[in-house]
Length: 310
Image 1: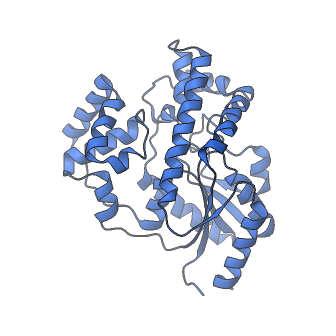
Image 2 (image 1 turned 60 degrees about the vertical axis):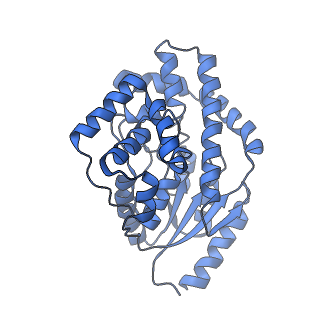
């Protein structure tokens, strides 16, 4: 029997049916879904970021979705703080917390603890911001590929927030993000996790991702972006850095056609899924299933709880 309380972690690349698996578990065990996807926290983009719809939310509670304004920044440290508080609320209701998402760093930070990176001096933060404005995040990412190739492989060249953060940390401490994540003192969250992953070849996932973007556009993704732009048109706002959001904003700003925006959206989604697959392959202790094997996943959760928590 384990003394640490149980949590289930459903992880894997985008578009592999993690939410459906969580709902199947909730049909057998009182449970609440807790988001750990860095894009699905934004309130203005429920369609573009594929947040659970009203029917999925009606099946069981879904928490930490769609609450953050486009102008606000989400970090791993902030996520951990929110997740711990949310998990404790779920446990207080005698429900099983099911963490669902694809942002590997958020889950790693929760289960393994956050590295205590020192505060970044204002002059370094300002200089990095000026470089982002003048050169774009791609220039910082190219440098990151030389100084910290492992971390560079996990983030997109267009990700302003993470490329800037990596540059700031390296300039301020002389250490890479990978070093801090592996050598700093960590305080793990006090939970006993069952990690379940959705495993699929990228070649099999690709056609589904393209179809899903077509569906998002049919469901009003462009109007969603237009409404978000009316309240926040700054392309540097953290919420606009998400895949799909950035491409549609470029179209609405008259920079590219809708067809080009869609092509970039598909291409960038594929690249993101590839990075997610690479990340989770390096994780240990994951029980792998094919998308759609939801009954088998629920069986595993039930037997794991019975064996380890009575």
